[in-house]
Length: 329
Image (cartoon, rainbow, N blue to C red; front, side, top):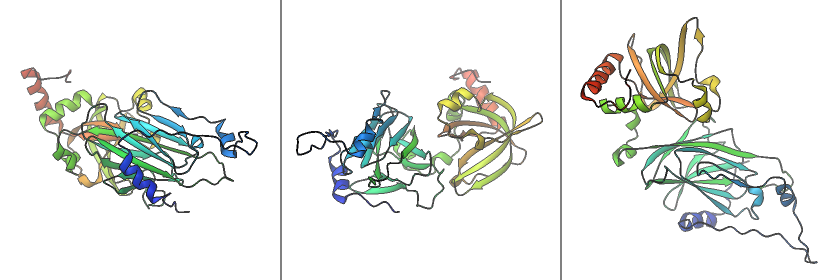
């Protein structure tokens, strides 16, 4: 069943009036005898209360607390990454994301935890909603849905299908988000910014801040059009920071580690790392690279990949001039 927009006036109201927080007031229907009566939804709600996180990164709630399918619930999150979990989706959520307390612009992505059929997701524009996710949009369910901020924030409008009072199955809408601040407005607007080679300063910074650092050679490439990424199968020769650090993998909210890395063959270890498909990555035959990267929604994404010979030059220069920000190895 296709999910229809709840109410065009409701969408316009949400776009125009959400500069101020929305105060939601609920009440119980009353019988002719003046006694409060509970609907099936309210009875079920007694067993499933709405929760709000206190860290400003995650939100969890229940649509059962909403008296009307016309209600739009405001959610404000101010973190570089986090998650949303919406039980019994009903009405709509308007989720405003900011990268911390600053007003810096950012690039961001969401990853849906499963193929959700009960909602559609939109990016809020100027008096217009732009499609971000729906189960029938023809895209792979594991594809990251990405966006750029507008004046330091982005608003996601998540609309639920009108509930069926006779069908109270426990549906959960769950997704994680990750935001990455950008250095300038031009970097925000350049769709190929993440494809350009890192300069010396960026290599140095990435070595000190990356989630994983691997030295190795590219054995093969797989251009995955469904997930819009190139998968680099890398034979490791040295590990500076282990990408399989279990503590970090768990902290990053990794959905499934089995599809992120290949296996070991004897004493040789092979990893699978990712780059955006649009970058047109090509393999360098026999060339040894230093792969510096970050975990983004469970995916090991390459940020910088200088040749090892050039990295040694950058490292020596930083040490000689005292510009090293961390221990360079």
